[in-house]
Length: 96
Image (cartoon, rainbow, N blue to C red; front, side, top):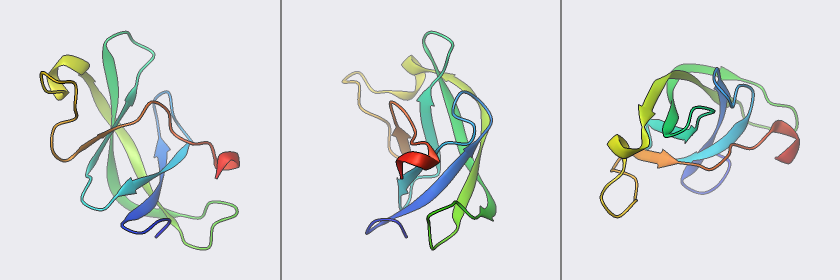
């Protein structure tokens, strides 16, 4: 666990390929900005682990499974729907 109640993930595919970030327990989809206007890249876990330099514990691999419209995944107030996590950017391995 990277932080209390979270775990480290590395992203595969899409704009954020190779980047890593922490995800709160219970989150099963990670949404990040896409290069395409109005769309978010969608990442989900694939039940594989990998070692990231500088980390004692392995990171879970999450792969890009598609894209979704930002209008479809947010509420009228602009907050993520339950079970979703929207990040402006993922961290590179060097930032951790």
